[in-house]
Image (cartoon, rainbow, N blue to C red; front, side):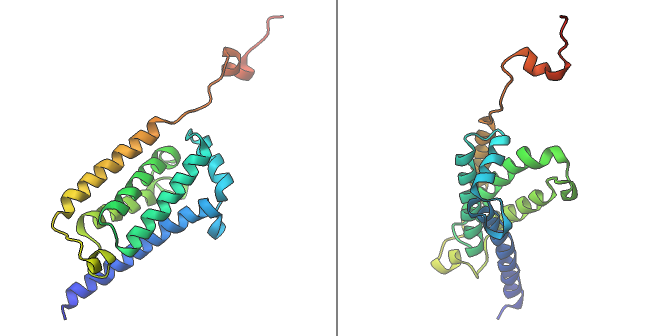
Length: 186
């Protein structure tokens, strides 16, 4: 028995379960209100406030993508597909929610998103190890780096497409723009 390989595979399994389980549960918080999450209505309101319209559709898509990517990563299935989905999700979350708050998570920043991205990129390029469904069904690792970078490129493109569709309410008149600062000369 190769102890180094076994320990590496156990470490990869632990990382996959931690990352995948966390992301899947995060999606369940929004989609079902599980684990003290906001549920679908509040998630839709949040998406709407972030300019992702219609909020209901974006909340459902984001939640389903989080649950699917988390499940694929946890199971070690689908090569770079799960990590690529997670990459897209994290890039959108960083730009819409966390970037304005700075880097550190203590301030609501994107520190944890960067950690999720780093692990996702590692798994996409390195693989899931022998304790995975990919290994059990005989998925070849021969082209993994090429497919990993292609999938990651697609994820970046998907995130850019989502972000480019953001819509914010615009004031209909100059008075609404200025608001209380408008003075009357009457």
